[in-house]
Length: 239
Image (cartoon, rainbow, N blue to C red; front, top):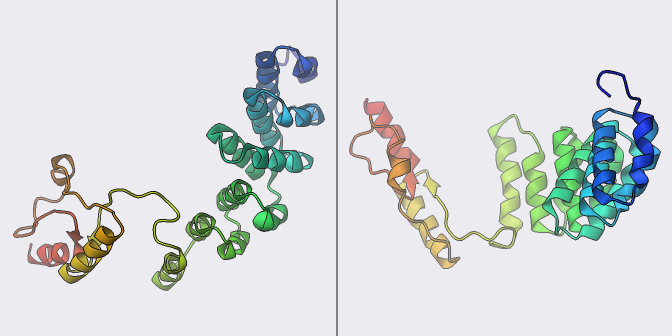
């Protein structure tokens, strides 16, 4: 294919082969070859019974930027119910490759959370402001992913984006067991440490493998968890 000795169309019949691996590899090669004429034949494979075939067909359609395949990719993603991380990644690649920003923003109302999350990631990769539509999502994880996808230029904008954490139920968006706490003062360290403890989140001491990488020029400051930024700033000022 790369040398021009074989035309991509010669591989299209293999998309209907009875061997799933042959179908998968044919889809993969056609995607790498950017074979636009094969796009319509690749679309049915997004719903193939074999996950590898679905994966490579979805990736290939994204490489081709074949927008008519978007409904099939969305349906595949919804049917997967967030079970297969590889198919989820393939769907994101395809949705990004299609580049249909308006259609991606419309997915903010899709009933499947996995579809909405994939749309958020695709819009983030496209650096599209339409991702802001997902900030009103009923699911905290979608809201947090959307907030993290919106670029900011000032500290005020960053604080505004971070405000989504104030309206999300504690720990409902990600199962946290341990955490590193960075604070602006000893008082805040104590307050946040107590809050973490109430939520069942441990703040174990920093391991030696981490502390040995921290600056050695700060005197009279203990590198621990919580980590007091203010103390580090004062220490830096004395050097």
